[in-house]
Image 1: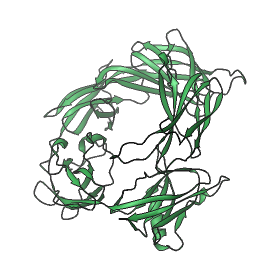
Image 2: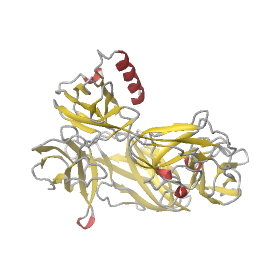
Image 3: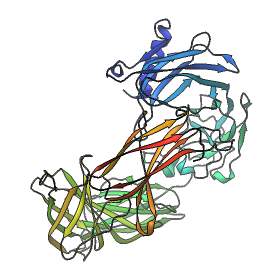
Length: 559
């Protein structure tokens, strides 16, 4: 069950059983021997106690959906209590749709074993409102059209995050976006045709900004204050943009014959990005190898093809749409090179040869096709068989790099060396694992490559000890491990610390490392950042796990 479904379920529970549901929490978190804690506080609106406001607690998770842990409804004094909470890093939120949180504290909370936090203050302020009409090119209301208010401070429209300040127009074309924090906004409606990977209907309106412009730089900025309603922010759709198509054929470069059933994808070429960032899948090539890319706006594109199981690599076709269709594109499939051999585990000094884990080998190579960000990188991968054999096919000519991808996190596995006269092992720097590097000719076959892998047992395990204070509400404990590279320079890697300050960095190669622990304090964007509480330590790692303690003294800020 995802977080939003859990929240809806908790809303229902809290609404219909207020006397019994001042707090609802996950039952499966009550197990375990570690001491549990609690989080309590108060919600106010305009300085007055806010009753019947739902407050939720969810896990912090950077890589996936956060998990709802507990929820409570405020009482008549605006107080809430989240009880029986395990140690962890959480995000606390209040749900009052017309309001925004104006608290000095950020929503992040770190709770250690048995800790009781009692001073969470949530100050809600009536949000601003932007309202207007969405009008079609015929002057009629545009019904059920998505509308968003996004920050005017973001300069890259393709990188704007999804905003909660969005809604759809009603049967009159009227929209009303409420609960906005004070600030400057751009209001937009329609579909971002150029940046979506979803199917776009032919009658879809292009992304249009208030008052009725497609160019973001010409959009009118709407400024909103707390509690203010800004009216008349209409958006008038213009005539539909003329969209074009590109046509071409997938061809075998050696035989000149068309390739049917090739898997195709295309991508827009952007400045400072790879040519395949945000690529879109297409229909496979037909029986004569032909393909079509529909609904393209002006810009530069790449299209590439791949045939599953074939020893082929693609030379993508690059093209530009200006003011018309493009035809006669050729996507060429060349005979690929092959690298094959075996993968063997290196014996450990203290316990012989460990069993070989399940691993994958990946090959990266560059073709002659260029995007705005440089060479197109082709990736091929294969699993190593239980007997240790591997074969990488469909490789382009030129420099090829072989990388190891273990399918288990522990113990860390890396390439120790590669035994073959044409291949060398790349020098590793910092946290970059070693790679095999060779130059291969088009269509060449390289056999009997012996890749020796080993367990990397070095690491650092430790605790951040806090003296004279704890991680404040909204604060965050961050740890960075700096690994050595050439000429005494270092490269950093962030690792997670739990709510009790414990951390572990695994799979470190022998060498000297510098660790930095710092507490990032909360502050509003309008304020000057507060001093950072931090402490450093240095440790030398061999083939073992070193224990370390880092002390942060709250009495010495800026250390």
